[in-house]
Image (cartoon, rainbow, N blue to C red; front, side, top):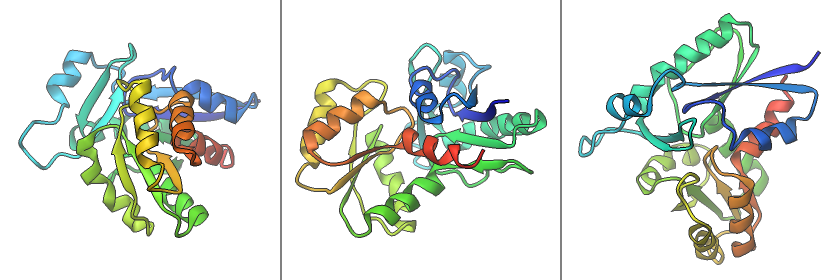
Length: 227
Protein backbone atom coordinates (compact mmCIF):
# COMPACT_ATOMS: atom_id res chain seq x y z
CA UNK A 1 0.00 0.00 0.00
CA UNK A 2 1.35 3.40 -0.99
CA UNK A 3 2.10 6.04 1.63
CA UNK A 4 -0.07 9.13 1.20
CA UNK A 5 1.26 12.69 1.24
CA UNK A 6 -1.37 15.45 1.35
CA UNK A 7 0.10 18.49 -0.42
CA UNK A 8 -1.89 21.67 0.20
CA UNK A 9 -1.20 24.67 -2.02
CA UNK A 10 -2.42 28.15 -1.09
CA UNK A 11 -3.49 28.47 -4.75
CA UNK A 12 -5.39 25.97 -6.86
CA UNK A 13 -4.69 22.30 -7.40
CA UNK A 14 -3.39 20.38 -9.16
CA UNK A 15 0.04 22.02 -9.17
CA UNK A 16 1.30 20.54 -12.40
CA UNK A 17 4.32 22.83 -12.24
CA UNK A 18 5.51 21.49 -8.87
CA UNK A 19 4.12 17.96 -8.66
CA UNK A 20 6.62 16.37 -11.10
CA UNK A 21 9.54 17.61 -8.98
CA UNK A 22 7.95 16.29 -5.81
CA UNK A 23 6.90 12.95 -7.29
CA UNK A 24 10.38 12.36 -8.67
CA UNK A 25 11.86 12.81 -5.19
CA UNK A 26 9.16 10.91 -3.29
CA UNK A 27 9.30 7.95 -5.64
CA UNK A 28 6.77 5.28 -6.56
CA UNK A 29 6.05 4.22 -2.97
CA UNK A 30 4.24 7.51 -2.29
CA UNK A 31 0.83 8.72 -3.46
CA UNK A 32 0.71 12.51 -3.74
CA UNK A 33 -2.76 13.87 -2.95
CA UNK A 34 -3.23 17.51 -3.94
CA UNK A 35 -5.64 20.17 -2.72
CA UNK A 36 -5.78 23.95 -2.91
CA UNK A 37 -7.16 26.72 -0.71
CA UNK A 38 -8.61 28.40 -3.80
CA UNK A 39 -10.05 25.30 -5.47
CA UNK A 40 -13.65 26.48 -5.12
CA UNK A 41 -13.01 30.08 -6.25
CA UNK A 42 -12.79 31.71 -9.65
CA UNK A 43 -9.98 34.05 -10.65
CA UNK A 44 -12.38 36.98 -10.37
CA UNK A 45 -13.47 35.95 -6.88
CA UNK A 46 -9.86 35.70 -5.74
CA UNK A 47 -9.17 39.18 -7.10
CA UNK A 48 -12.24 40.64 -5.43
CA UNK A 49 -12.10 38.82 -2.08
CA UNK A 50 -8.45 38.05 -1.33
CA UNK A 51 -6.18 40.51 -3.11
CA UNK A 52 -4.13 42.97 -1.01
CA UNK A 53 -5.50 46.51 -0.97
CA UNK A 54 -2.95 49.03 -2.21
CA UNK A 55 -1.98 51.63 0.35
CA UNK A 56 -3.40 49.92 3.42
CA UNK A 57 0.08 48.98 4.61
CA UNK A 58 -0.69 46.07 6.95
CA UNK A 59 -0.90 43.24 4.43
CA UNK A 60 1.45 40.30 4.26
CA UNK A 61 1.41 39.47 0.55
CA UNK A 62 1.37 35.89 -0.69
CA UNK A 63 1.60 34.75 -4.30
CA UNK A 64 0.44 31.52 -5.90
CA UNK A 65 -1.21 30.37 -9.10
CA UNK A 66 -4.56 29.30 -10.41
CA UNK A 67 -5.19 26.00 -12.14
CA UNK A 68 -4.80 27.65 -15.53
CA UNK A 69 -1.37 29.05 -14.61
CA UNK A 70 -2.36 32.64 -13.88
CA UNK A 71 -0.55 34.18 -10.92
CA UNK A 72 -2.56 35.61 -8.02
CA UNK A 73 -1.60 37.77 -5.06
CA UNK A 74 -3.40 37.42 -1.73
CA UNK A 75 -3.48 39.07 1.65
CA UNK A 76 -2.42 36.44 4.20
CA UNK A 77 -5.14 37.37 6.69
CA UNK A 78 -7.80 36.79 4.04
CA UNK A 79 -6.59 33.45 2.67
CA UNK A 80 -5.53 31.90 6.00
CA UNK A 81 -9.09 30.80 6.97
CA UNK A 82 -9.42 29.02 3.60
CA UNK A 83 -6.16 27.18 4.21
CA UNK A 84 -7.29 26.14 7.69
CA UNK A 85 -10.57 24.86 6.23
CA UNK A 86 -8.62 22.57 3.88
CA UNK A 87 -6.43 21.38 6.75
CA UNK A 88 -9.55 20.46 8.74
CA UNK A 89 -10.99 18.59 5.75
CA UNK A 90 -7.74 16.66 5.30
CA UNK A 91 -7.72 15.60 8.94
CA UNK A 92 -11.37 14.55 8.75
CA UNK A 93 -10.44 12.34 5.79
CA UNK A 94 -7.74 10.68 7.84
CA UNK A 95 -4.53 12.11 6.37
CA UNK A 96 -1.77 11.81 8.95
CA UNK A 97 0.69 14.20 7.25
CA UNK A 98 -0.14 17.54 5.67
CA UNK A 99 2.48 19.52 3.77
CA UNK A 100 1.74 23.20 3.19
CA UNK A 101 3.01 24.17 -0.25
CA UNK A 102 4.01 27.72 0.65
CA UNK A 103 7.13 29.29 2.16
CA UNK A 104 5.27 32.28 3.63
CA UNK A 105 4.94 32.73 7.38
CA UNK A 106 1.71 31.72 9.10
CA UNK A 107 0.94 32.14 12.80
CA UNK A 108 -2.50 30.61 13.20
CA UNK A 109 -2.60 27.39 11.17
CA UNK A 110 -2.85 24.18 13.19
CA UNK A 111 -3.73 20.51 13.11
CA UNK A 112 -5.40 18.42 15.79
CA UNK A 113 -3.49 15.19 15.28
CA UNK A 114 -1.77 15.20 11.89
CA UNK A 115 1.88 16.03 11.33
CA UNK A 116 1.90 19.51 9.78
CA UNK A 117 4.95 20.53 7.77
CA UNK A 118 5.30 24.31 7.38
CA UNK A 119 8.23 25.30 5.15
CA UNK A 120 8.76 28.69 6.82
CA UNK A 121 9.59 26.90 10.07
CA UNK A 122 11.77 24.23 8.46
CA UNK A 123 13.73 25.62 5.53
CA UNK A 124 15.58 28.53 7.21
CA UNK A 125 16.66 26.28 10.09
CA UNK A 126 17.91 23.53 7.77
CA UNK A 127 19.77 26.01 5.58
CA UNK A 128 21.41 27.66 8.59
CA UNK A 129 22.57 24.31 9.97
CA UNK A 130 24.18 23.42 6.65
CA UNK A 131 25.76 26.71 5.56
CA UNK A 132 26.65 28.04 9.04
CA UNK A 133 28.15 31.52 8.58
CA UNK A 134 28.38 31.42 4.79
CA UNK A 135 26.61 34.17 2.84
CA UNK A 136 23.07 33.41 1.65
CA UNK A 137 21.12 34.88 -1.23
CA UNK A 138 17.34 34.51 -1.21
CA UNK A 139 15.16 34.78 -4.32
CA UNK A 140 11.52 35.76 -3.70
CA UNK A 141 8.64 36.25 -6.16
CA UNK A 142 7.76 39.92 -5.51
CA UNK A 143 9.79 42.99 -4.54
CA UNK A 144 7.20 43.92 -1.90
CA UNK A 145 7.82 40.57 -0.19
CA UNK A 146 11.44 41.39 0.59
CA UNK A 147 10.51 43.49 3.62
CA UNK A 148 8.48 40.54 4.95
CA UNK A 149 11.34 38.04 4.79
CA UNK A 150 13.62 39.22 7.60
CA UNK A 151 11.50 37.79 10.40
CA UNK A 152 11.74 34.12 9.51
CA UNK A 153 15.39 34.25 8.42
CA UNK A 154 16.56 36.29 11.40
CA UNK A 155 14.95 33.72 13.71
CA UNK A 156 17.31 31.17 12.18
CA UNK A 157 20.33 33.45 12.53
CA UNK A 158 20.51 34.34 8.83
CA UNK A 159 20.96 37.76 7.24
CA UNK A 160 20.42 37.14 3.53
CA UNK A 161 20.81 39.25 0.42
CA UNK A 162 17.39 39.40 -1.25
CA UNK A 163 16.39 39.67 -4.89
CA UNK A 164 13.06 39.15 -6.66
CA UNK A 165 12.02 37.07 -9.66
CA UNK A 166 8.53 35.68 -10.16
CA UNK A 167 8.29 31.92 -10.80
CA UNK A 168 5.06 32.55 -12.70
CA UNK A 169 5.82 35.58 -14.86
CA UNK A 170 9.63 35.70 -14.86
CA UNK A 171 11.74 35.14 -17.97
CA UNK A 172 14.96 33.31 -18.75
CA UNK A 173 16.72 36.66 -19.00
CA UNK A 174 15.40 37.77 -15.62
CA UNK A 175 16.59 34.64 -13.83
CA UNK A 176 19.96 34.84 -15.58
CA UNK A 177 20.27 38.41 -14.29
CA UNK A 178 19.41 37.21 -10.78
CA UNK A 179 22.26 34.72 -10.91
CA UNK A 180 24.68 37.32 -12.18
CA UNK A 181 23.60 39.83 -9.52
CA UNK A 182 24.22 37.35 -6.69
CA UNK A 183 27.43 35.86 -8.10
CA UNK A 184 29.90 37.94 -6.10
CA UNK A 185 27.67 38.57 -3.09
CA UNK A 186 26.77 35.12 -1.73
CA UNK A 187 28.01 31.57 -1.26
CA UNK A 188 24.61 29.82 -1.48
CA UNK A 189 21.26 30.73 -3.02
CA UNK A 190 17.80 29.73 -1.76
CA UNK A 191 14.82 30.00 -4.12
CA UNK A 192 12.21 30.79 -1.49
CA UNK A 193 8.89 29.97 -3.14
CA UNK A 194 7.27 26.64 -3.88
CA UNK A 195 6.57 27.79 -7.44
CA UNK A 196 10.19 27.82 -8.58
CA UNK A 197 11.07 24.92 -10.86
CA UNK A 198 14.19 23.10 -11.97
CA UNK A 199 14.56 25.30 -15.05
CA UNK A 200 14.76 28.48 -12.96
CA UNK A 201 17.08 26.76 -10.51
CA UNK A 202 19.43 25.69 -13.30
CA UNK A 203 19.57 29.16 -14.85
CA UNK A 204 20.33 30.83 -11.52
CA UNK A 205 22.97 28.23 -10.64
CA UNK A 206 24.68 28.46 -14.03
CA UNK A 207 24.83 32.25 -13.96
CA UNK A 208 25.92 32.55 -10.33
CA UNK A 209 28.20 29.55 -10.09
CA UNK A 210 26.73 28.95 -6.62
CA UNK A 211 24.86 25.98 -5.12
CA UNK A 212 21.17 26.84 -5.57
CA UNK A 213 18.54 25.31 -3.29
CA UNK A 214 15.05 24.63 -4.60
CA UNK A 215 12.56 24.97 -1.73
CA UNK A 216 10.02 22.46 -3.02
CA UNK A 217 12.71 19.83 -3.62
CA UNK A 218 14.14 20.34 -0.14
CA UNK A 219 10.69 20.01 1.44
CA UNK A 220 9.90 16.89 -0.60
CA UNK A 221 13.04 15.24 0.77
CA UNK A 222 12.11 16.20 4.33
CA UNK A 223 8.50 15.08 3.84
CA UNK A 224 9.51 11.64 2.59
CA UNK A 225 11.15 10.90 5.94
CA UNK A 226 8.02 11.57 8.01
CA UNK A 227 5.42 9.44 6.26
